[in-house]
Length: 206
Image (cartoon, rainbow, N blue to C red; front, side, top):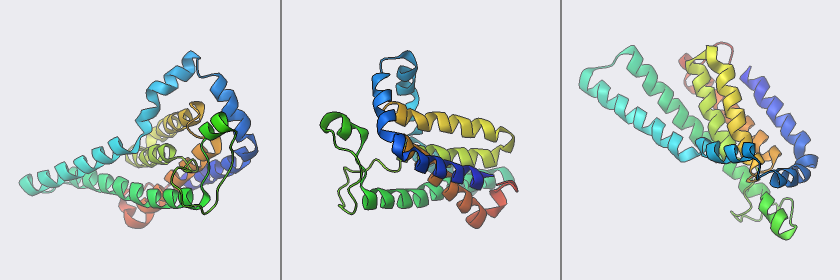
């Protein structure tokens, strides 16, 4: 299922390329609206560093608890899920940032301020880092792990992740295709990490 959703996001991202510039300008005109202001308040929930720190602290705390009191099935699963999330972040980030460096897409702000739009392939300049979106990748890594922990709530986690990821496009920090492809990378890498490295944590429907 996650594989199908990831490919759906990937295809949607490719379809959105011809619409990116127009949709970014439309979103810029809506920034004063209350719904866009709400997006500004919640968009940082998809930032990578807090999630990385939370997963790292959870792993360290559980390992200390295991060392102090002994291992239990619950502590082992919490430790494995935290480690799986950290591994997913690492692998997905390597792939995402490699794409960013190779493709070198300008941010929407370059278009708004200077009329500059598009990709600057193989320039190796880090300021051209719009594609794919890192926030989208991060929150979909989290959503995939949350879906493995509580499969019955998977639709809630995935819809919440999509809303948070799309705030990046609504706020014109990214184009819509950046967000959709970033989401696909997060889902796909986390799914494969669970299936290949932590198979005991992955539900059958993954």
